[in-house]
View (tube, rainbow, N blue to C red):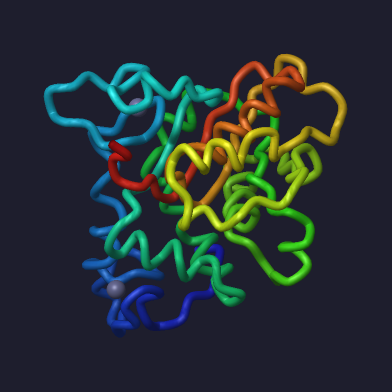
Length: 236
Ligand SMILES: [Zn+2]
Ligand SMILES: [Zn+2]
């Protein structure tokens, strides 16, 4: 393994030094909860769909949204262990967990990721003021790991957050959309014809990823695929 892990599970702190656990960072119980929800998701927005729905390109939830991104590739749903893991990965000491979650995402979605090629991996950026006070932030830590694993260029200088947006947890889906409108701008030249893998830790309403994807497409990107650790359960 590429990282040095402590002898305890990164999520529940159970002792995993006995060699009985298949993952070097998580106990079997936590690993199963993190990785068993990858099936039956809408290919377009990552929302869970029923067994009788075909996961083609739009589910009932994203049909009305008209997202600017083309696809969402995700590990799990934002609940239970996955939620705890995402929250901890945001901490200053969460980089190891963030990189490990990125690895779990790549391992779980190897087929979909290998079916396409990307010109650049772009983390959803934070406003520079927020970056000043944080030693690491999850989206960039995860994007860096995904870029290393997929051997694709990490581009942290393409997309910038043009203005401060309020904390999204306190806003309604409609407010989120309004807040994220034109919140991003492409700093670097033309992305003409490029295929971008946009990385974030969580996709909630999709408003942030949508606004970021819009900016990338306005700069010429042909395709924007979003990779996240967790998608929040149906936004009905
Ligand atoms: Zn555990
Ligand atoms: Zn959908």
